[in-house]
Image (cartoon, rainbow, N blue to C red):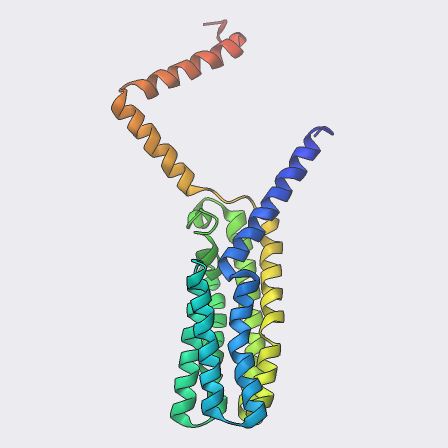
Length: 261
């Protein structure tokens, strides 16, 4: 490798890292997605800490979730992260109202975290890492990493194990608190554990993928195949002529190979 090659390789590595960062932000919602995840639970525990009113706390949390969705709609932005927050808050509100126990507002989210952590581990053990299923369409590679890009599959496996272990570690803290702590203690610990584990998992995912082979753009491959098929229909024999021209060019480039013939 010459000194002229190094800047090109460094630029390609930087481009790969930038693409990975952009894809992770898109997949996990970025800063706004984190705010939409934290704010309803933060408002619930704040109101409940002040007045111990389950109904008022639940209404406040649900109202702010709906406001976040309305803001997304007004800005014509994607609403998948805001809607997931609304559904999570709604399940918590219904659960708490049914049992009359304010701690049950957090229980559906905790069970979801437990299930998601197990899903990351189990899917990786089965050879189909969940993080690859999530990020594959974002990188325009779909499932090509499973059979055509083993280095990338290995990176997805590492990232999925990281997500699973982090989420299960979070559950190991929260579930004992659900049984032993009061509502405000559980609520503040849960709010405190919203962002740091998430950022750690995203950072590890970025670290693994930044060192992995580049994704295979299957969408570009399909478009190229469609163009070739369309060209063949419109101009039959073009592909064969192109192959013949390529062979002739190869022969011209290396005449010594055919002298004996």
